[in-house]
Length: 550
Image (cartoon, one colour):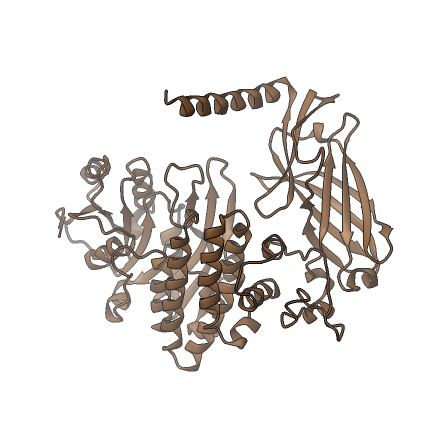
């Protein structure tokens, strides 16, 4: 089935790790992954590179790396497994060190990752050590931490059920495992073409009740290449099979947890279901309105069937936005209110009008869905309310005017008393703030809406995409961080060239993000305008060539 290159000479590796790097047709990146593992230094006994029967130059790249450093061992499969689980299992079988880590061919380990995990595992006698993973968007380089709440401080979790939030981190790659622990408990990945294999592997690991050492260090860099010719599994959500695979992997994970650890296992299973509602359900709901009718109906039917297996307590354990989405889906046989659900699924969530009530004055999702109640909105803290704010940005030479319209929400907004709004434009790639402005709210329609307006000197900002963030301040001293919903209409959400004292000319394009938030894309100066024109011309030529077949 496979052949393994000769092993390096035996050596004392009591406190070392085997790093298993898996790849398929990724010759462009696999060398960087292997080198990042080798760069961990003496902590790494070996790098086991499992080539899943690639047809590109991966074999040659790996052979060259093995020739240069005897710590590199290459395992080449004779047949492609169709997934990530089988090659990782091959790595577990081949590992010679007492600890093992996993690394994907298009990602890297940051300096010191192996040392940080090994040190924590040894200090606490832990079978598993886990650290922070960051998602690095390429080519921008912007980094977003994955589940940072879990890794705020170093600590030991004596039993997984004592920290149910561990089920939120389903990644296998930001962790170090004792090799004998995995083998003794038969903890392996699903074989063959099994998508979201991490879900099942992590559930099996937690079900074995290891001591888990948590470290706040960044130990894994997950490269996100949204412009890649072939998207990664986690990014390619265009087909219904992706959602089917995700729900099946999650179902298996919950079953594994529920059947383990007695009451503790049931607690973890409930936390896993709550996480599904808050994370997976919200993520796919945000994209649902943009899908075709056939996909929407299939997705709705599949999701409704899966959610029907959840207990009421499972839904009650989930944060309110996901819980409301789940109850709307369970209450309706056909897809409905997709635009409104998309806004509830956004982060932060917002609930757009109308705000109906049942005959007994109970807030409800819709008059024809009275069993989907929204009573929690009457007692939820203002800082967590899904307050809806509409935004309109009109570019102009003297300053672009941003108008914000704040909506009432079952009397809670009026009671809090809208006072002011802090507007901040944040650089999409770096996350750094640009402009900051403050405006006062005034009543528009008494008891229904309030408005505020600010002038923005967009010419002071760089050529980039800028996200608009809001902090609503109320007279009762409370505050709510949110975003503005992009309003479409005549003259809105279109590219406009305006004179600029700083840049001569400024190209401004307000637009709606996938979640419906208002953002703005800027191209200042003649060079910026020329760059936009060049890109548009290039796209036009490509479309013409595609249409003519030349």
